[in-house]
Image (cartoon, rainbow, N blue to C red; front, side, top):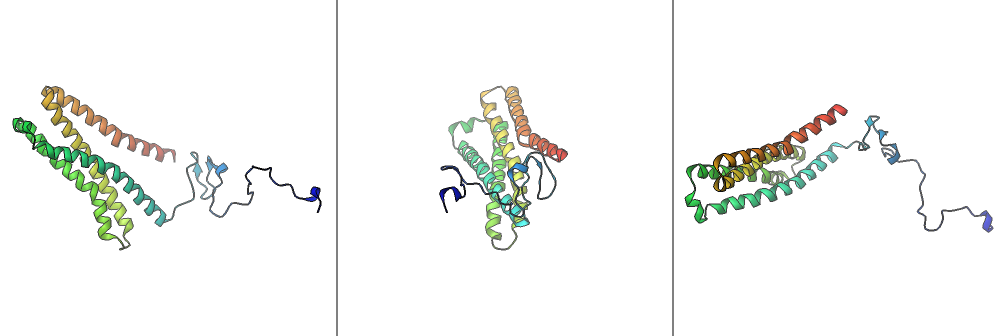
Amino acid sequence: MTMTDQPAGPPAGTPEREDLPAAAGARPAEDCPGTCPTCGTADPTGEHGPPETARERVNRRWHEILQETRVAQTGVQILFGFLLSVAFTPLFRDLATFDRVVYVLTVVLGAGATASLIAPVSIHRFLSGQRLKAEVVEAAGRLMMTGMVLLALTIGCTLLLILHVVLPSLLAELIAGGVMLWFALCWYVLPLRLRRRARRDA
């Protein structure tokens, strides 16, 4: 075979392209946005990939819950540690009755948030190997939501306790109420609105 008879290959330094048919269930990148060729549904965002199996969905949800739990646990543990140390400071004896009530309520809420956010780890450890991962994921998701509500209330009460010591009573309550409103908007109203919009678009 002469030099002119050899098949032309890609230029040096150019990555080779495989123009072979895609494997079954695969979704070419150029097909999105548009219609997902796997299931035929509309895919305007290009995020609709091959359908998950039940096992893959459970595993993905569990890993997501673990990541979320790590973030929430760090915050609640630092806050709860701070609350426990307040009772042993000299200024605690000078707190008024209202401030003491707020402090007790804050500690109880912080303990409840800590229990809810750590509970998924305990549940997983007790039920590991029992083929109940779907039930564990469902229970962990509900506990995470409960823990986030308790954590938001704990932060609000902590803020009220601190502001009530350094500011006039009414101003402290207004600021704490405004912060709690912002928490509600960021943590609950916005996610629910985005989910409702996604369902409407679908």
